[in-house]
Amino acid sequence: MAMVAESIQVEFAKSLLDPACAGPSQLKTWNRSDPAVRLAVYRNNVVSSLIDALADTFPVTEALVGVEFFRAMASVYVRKNPPTSRILAHYGSTFAAFVESFEPASTVPFLSDVARLEFARVFAYHAADVDSISPAVVQTAFDLEVDGARLVFALHPSVTVLESSYASVSLWAAHQTDGEVDLGELVVESPEDALVLRHATDVATISLPPGAAIFIRALRNQTPLGASACAAIARESTFDLTFALSLLFQNGAVTSIELPDRNEK
Image 1 (cartoon, helix red, strand yellow):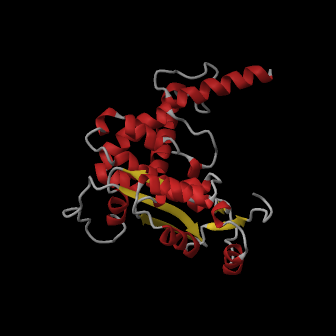
Image 2: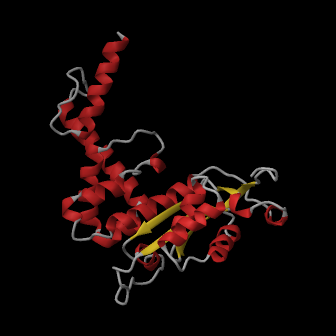
Image 3: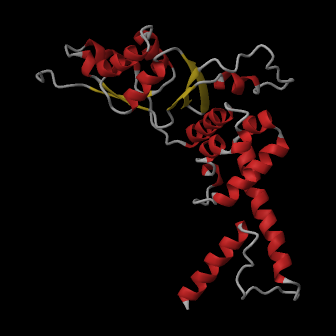
């Protein structure tokens, strides 16, 4: 009996996102109206609600292409990618990748990067709470007679680093005002990297200088400080280590520093 009920649930769930699926034959209505008609109404409500959830998560992405195009694109995504969690705030984690492969959006090549930035902000907002390292601990870590290059940093769970071939941060920032959006002087083809994180209760979106994204990503992967800096310099000779560290500490991005054993060679 339980297996039959589960089968009906699976068939019903499939029919919610597939108009070609008639739904379980066991469907009944309280007023004896046509179950197929009632299912169609329910299906439309479900799809519309998921599209609304995506619009809430990706408002700038929607603004860049217009409501009609966005909802049509989101409708395709919703039918191919149903939620895997009851928490709608987590829905859309693969939307940017979908946008990148969505042929009708190919004329807006920066759209997927803007979508990645927007989801990173949602991810940061809901990330776990972890206290940032205190200035005293930072000072101690750099004052001890150890090889600073071997220090290993732990970064806040909300930290995401994004590298873009387009002016994604500027495109996002231009839509954060109440007035009319003016993109007239914006050079969309200018590459911009971004650091997204939550400091206290505020989510920050910070444009990064050359090399900083590589450096921060390496730190997040538990690469020691020296090796992380070398990776950044190898890509960008102008990388400024002091500035990058100050940026992380000022924004509460570092939660701990692992000190190597003094006797370790």
